[in-house]
Image 1 (cartoon, helix red, strand yellow):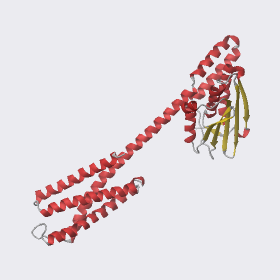
Image 2: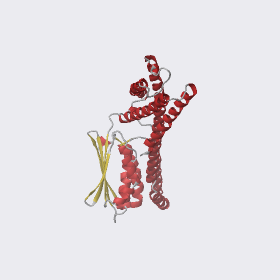
Image 3: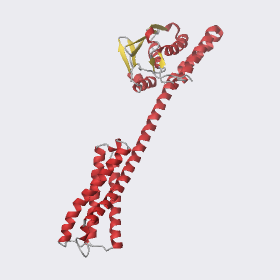
Length: 358
């Protein structure tokens, strides 16, 4: 966290050291090095260094760089003009007294350089130099903020793509596909009609899994169609071990939710509940709508395992989608006696965005 202040100090040191060296070299080239020219150059350099540090501190504390280019430029311009005036006010009176009492040498007429027109010229030169410093400093800050913003954007995009890939990997569960293909092979010779239906259901499930990232939200009716296909494939594998209890509110069928959200909950219930319970069990599915909120509850026999919750990419993806929805939704996994309940709440849009199929 200390690298930025260190860079600022180094930038100031190099800039004002260069200014001091330039001023002394100009004095040596066009006039002559004297106690007055050295005093003026060194004192003005130190003053401008201090004024620049104060300006930078004020700009950061007041968040000038959050105001936009025009308002930032106006504030910097005002600060430069006032800063140059302050530097001259602090420098001129002591120099005039020192010249009047011949403590320093400024030329043949030791106080001639303090005429009003010359003081205005000195102030303009000081403002020009301080403005150059402010322009260079603000440019470096703007470039750094731009780079940080780009890095943050790329990181966010990378995380989004990673979560989508994780979700896709979760949906294309290799065990699910392997079991479905094995069941299909067994059905081909035993029940060709049922085998054809299994192929249709499996292809529909996989098509929806591959198409998940193309849509921001879907209707409950569409999502239930996906779940029906998925459960039909799993019913062939688990047979009597998988029992389904449904309670669907017809008023909720047109409400919206993230794509594959319900299917993820059902898949999780089968994987961590039905499959691990001897004799299987009942998978309960309740969908209710009303008061601007869609409420979904999926229940299964079993116990919540902290490790499975922590490492589950499907549930992690669901939480991410809900957190970034507008308005955000809520997901909770809780133990209720001998059953695990996954509860999902999705606030409804006043004017849900239109979706286009591809």
